[in-house]
Length: 514
Ligand code: HEM
Image (cartoon, rainbow, N blue to C red; front, top):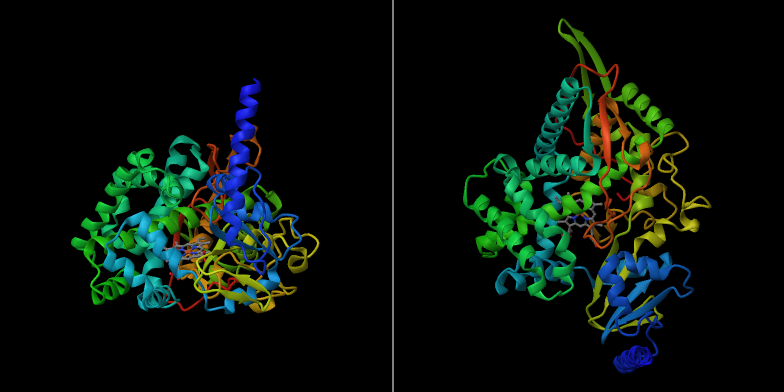
């Protein structure tokens, strides 16, 4: 026993000595360093377990407006005051691009030529063309119409299954994730969408849960199966690009034109186009799932949102065959403030992503904090989303009307107490370019669910109990870790034929991040 104790103490002393040795490069002008619980490796373990959510965890209760943590001789600065965010946004020496390079490099392993493009104007051009393809107008409509058609098809299938069996039992998260994945990928990739093939979806699921491990340099012999799944998944996109995909969304062609101009090999193009699936499965799916969960688990809110939708966005007709319900998508996007606000409150309260920047040169942040070249800077958004100075004394509560004005209208960025209060779509200048595409899908899926179905939990002894969350996934909101079986029924009074009124529209979803 004594030997074991001596060994543990010996290892700790050794790690502590190494830790101190790695701190030799510390400049006293830098933010103070937070020591890990376990010398040397404590922070590493924390990030491996909680991904970027760890930054928010260690910030709780700390008095400094910025502090640092050490990974061996690598420094990470963590912003702990919202007042520093404008200084981060304005500082051109703090860049997101190196992470895009690392992310693409590790996950899809492109050629050196392609990776080098990340250090050129190519990356800004990529952001520009993506944003143009996802800005409200005919190109976005083209993608959204296919998303809507797929959602309608999946909902109809569910409704018919319920009619035949009197109810459908399903794992609510799995069903929501698949339905939204297939809708969004049909929208983006068109009728040749590789994700329609269940083997490709399975391959993605064999790779996706391990992405953080690939990114944090786990030994490759431990990730062999995951790497095989990745190769199967990426190969299917290679085939997709080499075959007819002429009805894909404009975002695919805009990127292809740029990739061709910059002589990116087809294999590398395929890897890049395939990576959209990560944004979809990691970000869109848990966001839409929790939006629906937060509404269904509050009967009063559910009733109020149904009333708003039926008043503003649904028209009911009768023909000889029975009732027809028409959902007006333009009205859904811009004239249903309670639905939008409830969704944004889900994003605000559940968001756990942290924005990251690399320090490109030694720089003085806000004239006070010395940041060393090559270090990383993290803004844990959770801290800002919970801040009473921004959101008031009830900052930690779910208030579905928080994002509506006194007149009941949606509040945009200008009505927030600061322009950097709501960070669910990122922090300028790196805002998600797909936000109008994704927000439209979230509102549409949620509206169809609440209008057409009743959902009762079977898991959690029949209560809407919060499940255990999956930490460490590459996702802006943590998905549930456990199975969540629910019983879905057709809603009384909403049975009939459902159709959408899409129309050509320039209507934006007035999201609070702009
Ligand atoms: C609810 C859904 C989504 C959320 C909350 C979300 C959030 C974000 C955030 C926070 C960033 C900035 C990253 C950072 O600063 O760390 C980002 C970037 C990005 N997102 Fe999304 N995203 C969503 C859906 C999607 C979808 C569906 C796609 C693609 C189909 C997508 C494509 C991208 C791309 C390409 C970037 C990189 C931006 C650039 O190149 O400048 N996102 N997203």
